[in-house]
Length: 207
Image 1 (cartoon, rainbow, N blue to C red):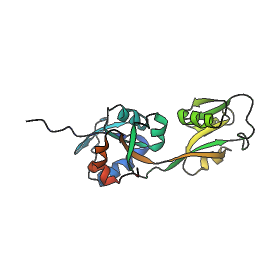
Image 2: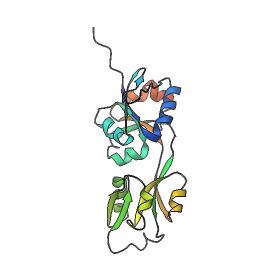
Image 3: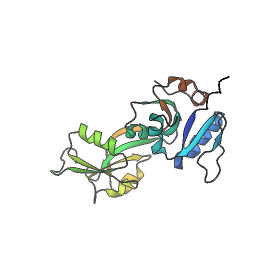
Image 4: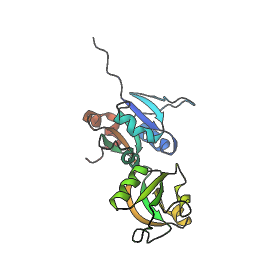
């Protein structure tokens, strides 16, 4: 007699995404039981692993996890978006990834030197600047990105909820790159996971 199949392994994001993900999972019939200092919360029917959201796309793409929650922006930034499929969109933590600068005309009149772009999304920022034929250098800020301009950066590429922080730092939005919310992803070559009860209960994302 063969052993029963192992439950799917799912990545649960730590930090600001956690509460909304945990609430959505509980509503879908997959409540998490988290114990302090334990990165493997109990969840009926799943093997859960608590980790930073930025780790989720790579872990899923490499087959170390079957599914995982993170921001759509992190899927694009990861470079694994061609291997991943969004199987549910929670619609929580909605943000926009924006290009901003203290110089409103900087794209029309860029400096002779390469633009310094401060961001937590260097891959996305690099693709954006290359598409605009801008000589540039991307610096990963690891947070507080808006504080880098104008003293240390010409442009920032940052996630925005209301835009108040950008305005408070004297920055003007130049362009929106993408919109993001919390999504559940799986490998694109594992279409059966779209039928998993967790994905079905959370609501499938449009193809």
